[in-house]
Length: 120
Image 1 (cartoon, rainbow, N blue to C red):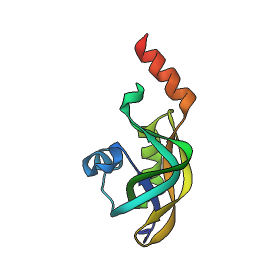
Image 2 (spheres, helix red, strand yellow; image 1 turned 90 degrees about the horizontal axis):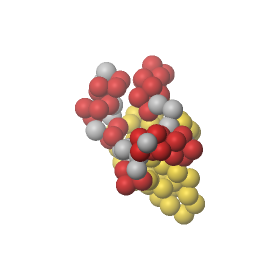
Image 3 (cartoon, rainbow, N blue to C red; image 1 turned 180 degrees about the vertical axis):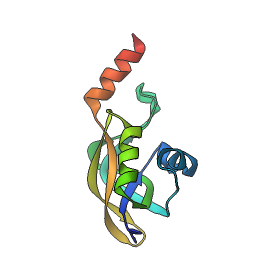
Image 4 (cartoon, one colour; image 1 turned 90 degrees about the vertical axis):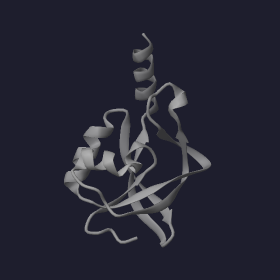
């Protein structure tokens, strides 16, 4: 996939929505379908209000690859994702082959704390 002068970002939840991306970064990005092996998507049923990824061998997560994400956009996305997520570099499969991309993965201990805090 063409990186459009920035980095690809694999998204699998709220950032698949162009309007949400525009609200966070100030713009939208070219995109395509992608799959990420070795990660499982955990849904809102976990007690946390947003989906997140956890490492799990043998699992595959379908998502979208946003192209051309510059450092200023990543900084805004880091703030949006907050402390319950960490940005990692991964290899994503696309219709054009594989590419290195960023992805936000859940930090389980922080998510568990956040869920407990919301319940109390």
